[in-house]
Every structure is written in structure tokens, then in C-alpha cells.
Image (cartoon, rainbow, N blue to C red; front, side):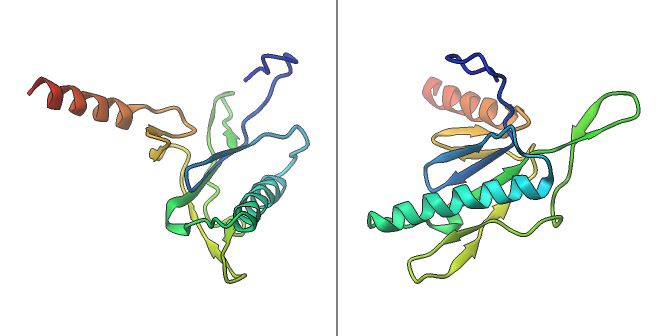
Length: 140
């Protein structure tokens, strides 16, 4: 995407949903999968500790993340890379001082965040199915 203020091109590298908040990891300095993991974990830990400091807490069962990377094909096209089990898990801080792992989802897996079914791959099949069902319900 392009920043509306600076007109700088921004690559979305990761999307993290933590308890009613979408955190996007966008950084021009990310050079490797590990850098992406580190930035994502750092953002998650910071957000979780901020919530703990204000009396809130993350619920691991309501948290998940996508790590987005691309595999370039010989013909110049790309596919989403499968990053499952290639890096440490992302964790959220808990009230007892421990940390809990959260789910790592493939880029094309839709999840409901802030009322809308989305995924980094941009597939809107699930959201369209939900809208169609709502229309049918209202028509009935």
C-alpha cells in the first residue's frame, strides 16, 4: 500500500489479531523470515504488556497470526510461502508472568476480526457467504 501522507510504498509483512485488535507488521528493514518473526513477537509482547499494565489481559484462544512471505516461481509468478514450523511460535504475555502460544494460520485462511471475515491473501469467499446468509435471513 502507499502511505496517503508521505506517498511511501509500504509492504504488509504480517498481520496479528490479538483480542479485538489487528496489529500490522510493516517494516522496510525486514530482510529475513526471522526478522519478520522477531518484529511480530516484539509487537505482540509490547501490546500484551501494555494491556497488562492497564488491567487488561490477552486471551490466547482469541489470538492468532499470519506471517506472509512469497516463493517466486521459475516463470516469474509467486505463491504464498508456507512458514508453518519454520520459526518459533508467537506468544502472548499472561497475567501470571508466563507466555502462551497463539495460532499461526496460513495466509488464505479466513478469520473473523472486528466483525469481518478476512485474510492476507484477500480471498473474500467466507465474507460473501456470510453476507448472502444475512440477506437470506432478512428476506425470510
